[in-house]
Length: 516
Picture 1 (cartoon, rainbow, N blue to C red):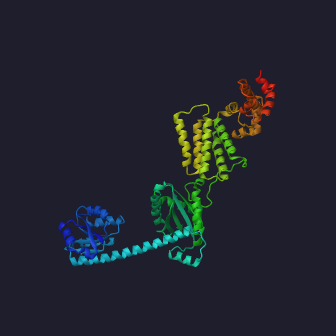
Picture 2 (cartoon, rainbow, N blue to C red):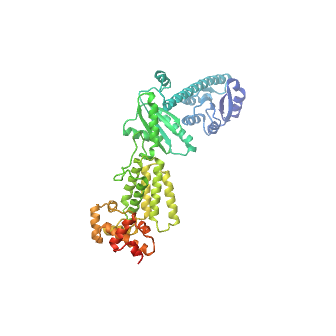
Picture 3 (tube, one colour):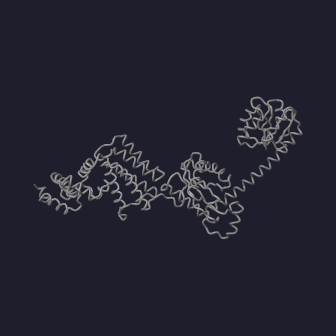
């Protein structure tokens, strides 16, 4: 049945139309009535009729105002206007809004029935056309999905091409764009449909391609490849406008010239989206858009991963400890470059940075007790590592946190810097300290730092380090610690080497010193 709403301020006319017109036999049903245009707006919103029979003259909001409001809101309704003889010129204004009929009061039943018959025929044509369009759209979607997902060799290319033509998808060129909303799985369905609805007018309405949904993506099949950086930026901005504020990642798969290669473009676009963590943000990604960070520089690529990670931890901690904040970000980028060159995926890289950051924090707080607020801040920061969507942002955030956490100030000249280095050696004598490592962290050449060290201490770096270690060894030996354990504690892996060094500086063996 076709639904009808009657709008008239005269109760007799409303009642008469309801009872005198053979609605059911004409294929209609009266679902509601209203006394003026304003009331009718609420009624129409509630019952969603197909036809509105409306008086042209009514209080509060007249019929023409109501038609104007509904038309501007995009409501497609069939209107039949009722008016007196004096209102004919006024009623003609409604013609531009597509009124289906115009009847003069008092209403003649035969004229009303004839108008309703014409309206019914028009509505049936529209419904048939909509069904055919929907069926055609469904067939187009099915074939589009087969083009996107089919990776098998096409046995009959000519037949396949004819299907593509029937679906309206036979074009001179193609490129696939996939859009992945950054949203929870529970909200994915709504987000994909929101993106699709926002993009269809821009893509299909302007004959630039078609839009479909293949969870977890909204997919665009464009009828020409995207060429040039400026065009990619324009497409990204168009997608952002259509997204309605949704966070998303978008990538294209490269241009292809035949329908059989659409699946290849789709696969490449998917892969680019999956690699978004390693790419630049706020741009339309492509097959070759990975933004790799600097390479590993002088690091020895053959070294064990755990050993390399420990070296990064040591360098970052030492840079923070001596107040050289400028070295932190380059070291973090170098670490990221190493992880990338090792072929690590997003999750392992985040785990590596979690371990690195946690170790640096523990070194910074060694020997002291963190307050509850500091512990909470560290916990939030470490957990947040796994929520970053881009590697660049992750590295920047770690840099900011570590510098803030270390509460460093800018170094006050070379004298203060040197004092910090001496203090560091006295606290970390057991580590594998090297002059060239410290020189790199301080932005000095090894030769310059070695000479500076000799001028300040009267000793060469290695001699000074040995003497600090031997002094610590004497303290441990006096406490009754075994000789081989002392060697390990002060940084000598070989106990015989420790014997020779101890005898060189003390004139006796560690055992003899212990037995004094």
